[in-house]
Image (cartoon, rainbow, N blue to C red; front, top):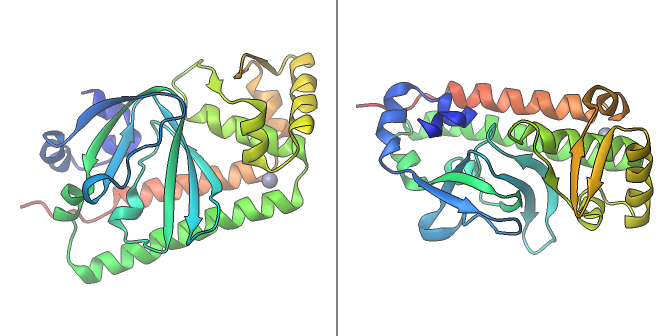
Length: 240
Ligand SMILES: [Zn+2]
């Protein structure tokens, strides 16, 4: 029943859960590993304890950080929804376990093409919304607001009380500010007792106070993710 710890798996109709179970394989991933999303016709991952940083990349351009995905996410759904122009990359930032399943298993249970087209467009509009929030955030909010937002999003994906493995360099890459700025803001948060950090790991000590510092994008992206989960829960899977 370990697979039910993943919100997306738990959100499937029980008949689908039973059918897919035979195709799941539990794999351990370490910090820095890339999830093998493109292996053998594509796989989708249901994280249980690991957390991945998701980047989106168009054509030959460098990837842009989109979100963290842990036990409240599914990774590789772009394979199901045929979002071919945008490649998703997933790099582990907190080691742990995930269930991996061939994407073709999912396709077998998807309804006919006309229904799929509707789901594709709804999924795509959510993806566009997420990219827009990221772009707006980078342009409009200061470094402490963005650091607070990113840390909250990372921790929302972790099993309770864990630390996230994020170096200052990585955090500055994700947010797009100088590493020195990230360093001095983390020291400030540390002195205020809001986070503790060391050896490339960060832990939130006072969540409420960190929330007060984060920009509104945190709330917007959380809502967007809840809408995505609701969408997943209403996919008309074909069960014969
Ligand atoms: Zn923002």
